[in-house]
Each structure stands twice: as structure tokens, then as C-alpha cells.
Image 1 (spheres, rainbow, N blue to C red):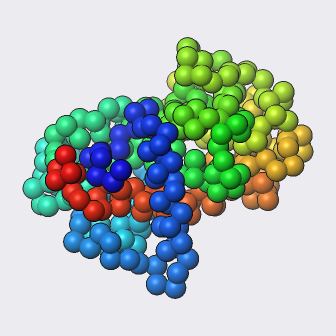
Image 2 (cartoon, helix red, strand yellow; image 1 turned 90 degrees about the vertical axis):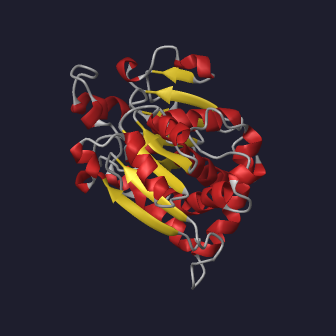
Length: 312
Ligand code: CP
């Protein structure tokens, strides 16, 4: 299966078998992270560049660490001090990186579809590290890996995704991945933060959290994206906390082995209380660790072995 695709732009176009293959490969790559010498030469001589037009801690650092662990060179372009501020277009920036011999561009951008444009422009592989409100496929894959690692399966699990679905690229990638691997998904949030017609993807929708909590095997809490909110989408932060915040009291009504997940960064005291975030049910730190392993597997999948153009 390796070498079958040049880019990873979303999970919408990824079949279940391909997801399972990447998740299976991740197991071996995770083992490397716990060795004394956390490095293999598999991608020696390959170069990746991270090009982030929006802030990031986890995604950017985990790609850079994944590249280093695999023996690849990595370069981070700081958009704020690059020629982007002189008006250089996204396409020209991508062509410039390719002209310097970059094999893969990892792009985060505020506009949905920006990675697709870059993927059509350059021969280098492109990974979507989050495009607007569209997709965040590597977050989706690391979430699928974390659930599989903890629960042994995705098939048949009930996953509740709670909060601001409308603005969430994480929710979209998770929905594609979870549905394709056979989970039941319920989206929970205020009507103004749940997209119209989202049920067409096969999910359930509930505007009330409390009836959903006892049925969920996984409670996936989204960040309330205050930077993307328009006025009036919900009455107040206080009411949001009352209706949708995950607290100890709410957690006490969940299944004994429920998993609490959050993509980070968190707003402690808003969508999740600090004590829930560090409770034994929480796998937030494992998600971060698994993010490095999944991205190592992806770099290997897209760059390792035969180059894409030779396999085509
Ligand atoms: N989950 C996530 O994408 O985090 P960052 O914004 O820190 O990369």
C-alpha cells in the first residue's frame, strides 16, 4: 500500500483499509519513541518543511520530532518573518520550497482547500496540518490510534463529540474516520454550533449533553474556538459551561471505563474542568505522544520506500 498516494489532505477520501494500515504501522513506530536512542535512519536524506500560517504547538512540534526520529531533515518556515509578509503567494512560497529540494510540505492554513492548491502546484508530498474549518487529518488519525490502543477497537463504540462542531476541523476528520471504522457518533452542542445537515454523514445530533453521557464509550471534548466565534452563536460562556462543560459531577454519570479526549489546546474551566483533564479517564497526554508516532508512520507511508512518482 506504501507509495499509493502523494498527499494526505483529508480523511474524507481515505478508505477504512488505508486507515487501518497506517494505524497498524504506528504501533511499530511508537515503540521507537520508548527506546534509549529514539532515532532510526529510515528517511535519511529526505527533507520536510513545516509551513504554518496559523499558530500551533502540538502539530508542528510533533511533525518536526517525527522527522528527526526518522532521520529526515526538517525546516520550519516562520510565516511572520518570511516573504509572505511582502505579499508572496502561497503557490510561489510552495514552489520556492520545492526548488530548494524539499520532499514534503506540511501546511496549516486558515483557508479551507489551501493544502489542495499546494498539492496541485508541487510534486512534493503535502500533508494538511489543518485547513480552516475543513479537516485536520493527522489529528483524526492520532485520535483513532489512541482509541484503538485503549479500547482494542473502534467498531461498535459510541463516541460523543461535544462542543463547537461548526468551527472544528478536528470534528470533521474524526467523524470521517470514526464512521468509516464503524463507530456510532453523536454530536452534542448548541444548535448554533452544529452544522445544518450534518446528519447526512451518518452521525446522531443531540442538543442536550446529560442524556448522552451514560451511553458514551468515548467523550471527545472540543475547544471552544473563541477566536472563530461570531457574536450571538451562544448566549454566554457561563451558560455554555452549565450546558456543555465536562465536570467531575458529569463524569460521575459516565461509564466506568469511559475515555476523555481533547485535541488541545484546552480552555480549562470552560469546556473541561482541570480535574477532569488530569483524571484517570483522560488520555489527553497519550494523544500527544501518539501524535508523534502516527506522524512518523505517515512520513514513512508517504516518503519511505519507493518515491510516489516511481510507484505510479
Ligand atoms: N491539536 C492541535 O492541532 O494542536 P495545535 O494547534 O497545538 O497544533
